[in-house]
Amino acid sequence: MVEELQSKIWQLERQVFQLQTLFEVAQTLNRCRQPEELYSQILAIMAGTFGARESLALRFDEGKPIVAAYRGGQEQIAKNMHATLPSTFLQGSTRQQKHMIGEALGESGGDQDFTLWEWIEVRNQPVGGLFFGKKILGEPYTSNDEALLRAVCSYAAHVLENITLYQQLERAHQRLAAENLALKQQVRQEALHQQIIGRSRPVEQLRQMIVNYARSEAPVLITGETGTGKELVARAIHEASSRASGPFIAINCAAIPENLVESEFFGIEEGVATGVKRRMGYFEQAHTGTLFIDEIGDMPVSTQVKLLRVLQDGVVRRIGARTEIPVNVRIVAATHQNLQQLIHENRFREDLFYRISVLEIEVPPLRERREDIAVLAQHFLQQKNQARGEAIAGIAPETLRLLEQYDWPGNIRELENEVERWNAILRKGDRVLPEHLSPRIVKKMEYGAAASDAPQSLRDAVDRLERQMILKTLQEAGGNKSEVARRLGLSRLGLQRKMERLKIRYSEGGHAAAD
Image: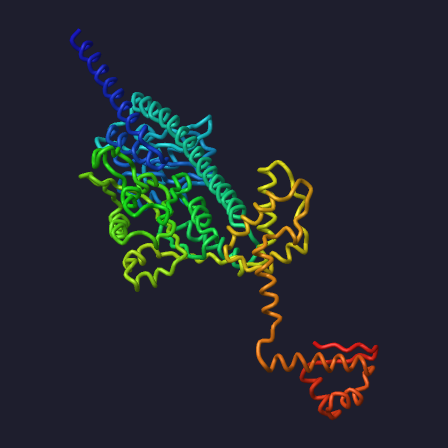
C-alpha cells in the first residue's frame, strides 16, 4: 500500500515537473522572434532537463540539414555536420536519422535507447529537429522523456509557424513601406514640378537643390529679389522633406510691429500685462515641422539674440514664463537684402548669419530665365480662368514675344499681377493682344527700344551716317561704285575700304544691304 502510494506520488511529481518544463518552454519561446533563437533556447532548457552531455538542433534549408544550435564539447564537429551527414538524411526514418546523427557525433549507433531525436513539423513538413545525446548519469531515455520532447517539438512547431508568418508580414511591411516611400517621392517630385514652374536651366538647378536640401535637417537661407517666389521654394523644401507631415509656419518679419516680434516668435503667458492672454509662439506652432522666417533682415537685433539661443539650445521661453519648452523645428529663412552689408552696419548678427546659412539657395530673377515667362504667363492665365469660370482664349504669339523682352523688375509677382489685370479687362473668348499690356510695360519697352537704337558713341554716329549715305547712293547709282565714289567725294579704293569696314554688300540684283 505504501509502495503504491509512493509510486503515485512519484508519478505526480514527474507530471508536475513535465508541466513546469513545458510552461518554462512556452514562456521562453513566446519571446523568440528568430528561428535560431528558438532552437538555442530549447536546447538550453531541455539539455538541463534531460541531463544530456550534448544536444543538437538542426533546421532544414531547401532539403539540407544545417546546425541551428549546439551544446556540448564537440562544437567543431557539429559545425561540419552538414558535410558529414549523408545526402539521404531526410529520406530516412526517425530511427535511421538518429543513428546518422549519433554516428556523426561519435555516439554509439546501437545505443538507440540512450539518445533522443524528434522532428519538428510545420504543416506536415519537417522544418527541423532536436537531438539529445547520452545522459551524464548514463541512464536510458524513457517513454516519458520521449513524450515530453514530442510535446516540446509540437509547441515549437506552432511558434516557428508564427515566427515564419511574422517574418513574412515584416517583409511585406518593409516592401510596402519601400513602395510607399517611392510613391511619396514620386508624388513630391510631381508636386515640385507643379510648384516650381519652368523649364529653364536655372529652374532645373533650383529643383535639384530643393530635393538635395530636403534630405537635410540643416537651416536654409533663401536669397533673391522681391517677387521671385522665395516662400514657394521654402514650402517646396518642407513638403519634400521628412517633416512634410508636420506644420509649415510662415512669418514675415517686416509685417510685425517691432514691439510684438518677440511675443509672436516665442509666445506669452497670461497676465503679463492687462488683458493679455496666454498664446503660443510661432516656434511652438511649428514643432516637428518647418518655421519659415521671411525678410529675416528686418528682425530687430534684440530678437536675433533670442533666436540664436533657440537655434543653439532647442528650447523657447514664453514672455513671463519661468520654464522652458523644448521645440523641434527646422528653420528656413529668406531675405532680399544683403545680410553681409547689414552685418557691416551692425544691423544683423554675424553669428546668427552663420547659424541660418548652413545651406543657401539663390532664387534667380525672372529676367535670367526668360524662356519660363511664356510658361508662367499661360499657367497663371489657366489658374485665373478656372477661378473665374470663364476662359480667355489665350495669349497671342506677338504678346508672348513682348512679355519675354520685358525685364520684369517685380519678377513672378509682377507677371501674376499682369495676368490678373487681363482677367479684369478681357471677356470670355478674347485673346491677349499687345494693346492689352499694362502702360508701364509698353512705356518701358518703348524707352528701352529707343535707348538701344541711339548711337552709343561719336564713332557709332559717324558710322551710321556713312552707312546710310553709301547705301542710298548705291541704290541711286545702280551699284556703280565709281559713280558712288565720285558723288561722295571718295576714291574708288577708299569707298571699297569703307564698305568692307561697314560690312556693306551690293548684290547683282541691285539691292544694297549692310550686315
